[in-house]
Image 1: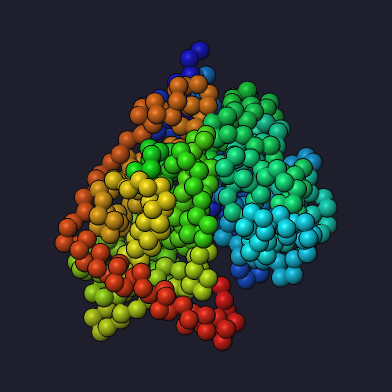
Image 2 (image 1 turned 45 degrees about the vertical axis):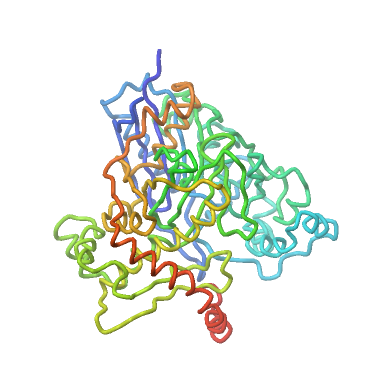
Length: 517
């Protein structure tokens, strides 16, 4: 029987969604369940219970499988994407040995174990000597080895959300190389783990601790009889893990060439540029990760706490708008759009540095707002947040474009913050580029669905699948007068602010002992 439908599961920090699409990219069925909020056992920690990930996946897959809008017999496959950078140690049966350490976690190892002289020599030869201490300090595996040795000894595999899902669904410890970012020993250029033992020594992990890696559109296994009972999915359904959430958004928005940038206004805000050529920035001004497509890479310009700042504003300063939004059954962002629409570009001189968490290439960076005067209100602060995000993405994007040698001609936007017309228009004005909001906010799920559709043979390739399934929505044209103001503030103020304030940021940390932003 010809397969006509594909399901995507998108397991984020706040919720998990299951969506069924047809070959034209139409959403036929959708279910969403909130995750239990992440919690902090100690300051700076961020953890979630892995069991909640699985339980909620079962809830949403069962719900969509009950839908009468598609024929389950014609379901071709399941594509999975998820939040990245999590660590879940499991035993041989796949049972979690502790809570999931999630990407927002800021713990570090104070006194990591020393590495051998040969490892130091190896990293020196490849020009990465300075990375040894950074990796050891931030590696979750080193932390578990140092502070939870009994758990480390019992660990059979270190999983992410996706590799744990794949094991629960298929019985195999398999995953996509495109899920691995940050402090994992992934050689992105090769879509595989590093082949040098010395690298694993620095991460304090063994090769056997890691799942087997596949390309992002390869079938990793099939749903077992037991998993079918728990999830409601058909036994034997092919499973594809596409990529991490940000890479999946690029594919789901059809931003698969280096002249189209994908902005994700999520908790972390990013500008993604996809290239078929492997490019790295030695100063880590942007990251290079495996893409949602084989033999392609995402250059990721990253603001650790991006649209998180908008939510921070709402929680700390936007209580009136939150109450108003609830009364009117609207998103808070929509009410805030109304509040700031009459504030001129540039927020009447209020400028924001969006480093609520430091950028890796700006060692002493902290969040700051400068330019206050008696005219400024809470609304000016909110607009300055949106503008600060736009300035920083432009700064990082210009560095990436300098490396690709391909200028951006268009932006596409997704993520929860893309529901804000003002946020999208500000991005268009700062970049001076036409900017398209996608027809669906579920660009991440769409990307996972495309990977599954290509991987199971529903389409002959990614170009064909994107053309068939991806649609853009409202287009925002840059406003010439606005861009002129933003361009001046960006070049004459924003680009100079960090260098001017860095010595003060450093002294703040030295005096208070609070160095991490």
